[in-house]
Length: 155
Length: 155
Image 1 (cartoon, one colour):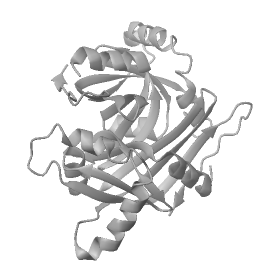
Image 2 (image 1 turned 90 degrees about the vertical axis):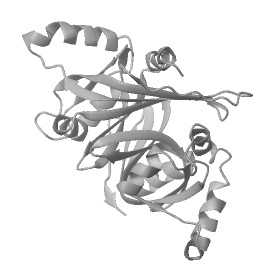
Image 3 (image 1 turned 180 degrees about the horizontal axis):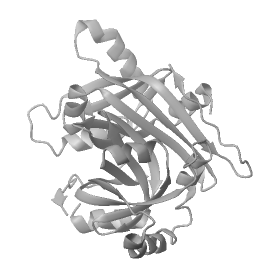
């Protein structure tokens, strides 16, 4: 899959899994996100995922679209986590991220559900974040085709 | 979700995402697996995932079952990777793992597809592995229910 096809899959799905790591222990959570080329925007509340990404911003996102056992596409993006804090400097970026996210009905679901379980005082503070994509690759299978393409690109 | 409900979801789906990490960089891939309480069995060929798990066996597996935006369940398991090498010592374990995996029509797909892209001499050698689950937790949402349960257990 070339870069455009990888981007198309991210834009079309808006849902995937994010992995972060601390002390070389990986951790995965499902996320909803909004996409623009080179970036993903998401919403979370303070918890293990956010704490780990604050201490180590290296993340990996995997998104797939499976129509059947011989027809699927999977994109893996490696990037860096950065928060969009509620300060004047980030007003425009936050507003842009929110407008993109609000096009997706369920954008708040996973972050909100997780926050219901937490007793920390900061558990309900919404956090807008951006993943800066550094590398992206895709793998695809189609019926009758033996060629499966992949393409690694620095963005 | 209690331990039994987490196990039921792993047994029912047999498909999820596995994250591994090297130098604190996480990496995710989709995997098919067979489940028995406390363990997951999978198939792979030598590539980034296997190389990383050989250098750092700590992994995280995430599995979900999404019926709609207000009805879903997600299980996260933390565990350790171990290979079942093709030696006499592991004959019985391999045979057991293979019999479990073969009940799933697509168990070989992801590992095989990835191997087609690789030019290393070992790329086509099938590897049977086991993930020893050390901790498991589940999160669930149901329509009309405000209670979302989670439960962390050492296995």
